[in-house]
Image (cartoon, helix red, strand yellow):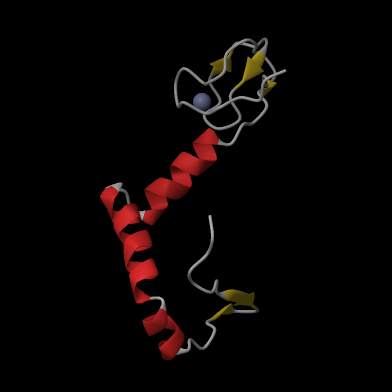
Length: 97
Ligand SMILES: [Zn+2]
């Protein structure tokens, strides 16, 4: 995905926004409009998209805590079967062997 905006820079105590050249924004207005429309058409807000991205990023099941056997989902902690591609409870994608 090509960025159309400039990410904020994290600084001590907050974030620094880059000064934006309005002429450049106007020049690319329709490109920005169509990218925004595509996003809005999903009906999701940024937090939901981040959550889905996290869930779809493969993670390895972790060894179960003491007193439990096998492996557990690293996201929700429920029992994970080694051959499963996703967690039955939360949908977390697991790495494939
Ligand atoms: Zn899970």
